[in-house]
Image (tube, rainbow, N blue to C red):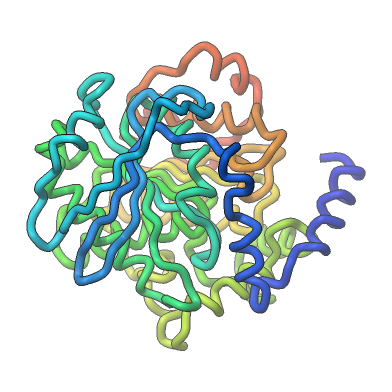
Length: 364
């Protein structure tokens, strides 16, 4: 990254709203503008009711093409009841199997510091995931802090995951082929959900993908992670902003010591999913993601951590990051046992990456 790019990033960072006081404004800025010009997503908007509360979901169909407006497609609105059992309505079954019976399914948790972000702001990402994998992608619109502090978001994700594990046979998918995936705060939720499942004796997901996840809760000036000091100031995601998100998310002091809010605090990470961690070179969260993968390996799990160079936190949703995004999908697809399309290889095959933990073929 050259000096001019660094100065530009520093200038933008200085103009970003204060998370602590301006989070409602940040949410409004993320809302779709000019609705008539917004893409019509080829998918279903659902409400899953569990423990007396509705959790909005959006399911993206397998192999979906690029998200261009298509007036012939309408989203069906269905209400599922997790408390009554895993009964999937026939229209949803037909929708999921429209292209071909999928071999897997991605359950996705969006980022945004547990305070911002929605299924709308992550629809482009999820559409791309459905396109490249050929699998359904279900995005969870979990409750946000500070109105709903920890563990509300995790409880919503837990409700959805439990329902899908019970309903998987109806979808023609083996429960172990449901892959947890999340970025940033969503990566935190995915890792916490796997820890929760082990602790409660529930089925533990076989695989999870964590994109530049927040896992440690260690964001003060004495952080043990070098990346927090190297990239914690004057970048788009700063140490101060991370701390503000954490303060809004964790309303009680004891929550900061809970491994379900910071999975790296767990005494043991045994019996966890096979894990792929993707980190960004200029991200203050970089080193904790790589440390988590190393802990997983040390505790007997299969894990890899790969650093994508010349990137910032959240690069997969940022403009002008086509080669880095394509390179990331080129890493994810073979890890899932899927082929990489020629267009992805052409777009991202030359983007530099570094294996930080594990190597292909070395981790199971």
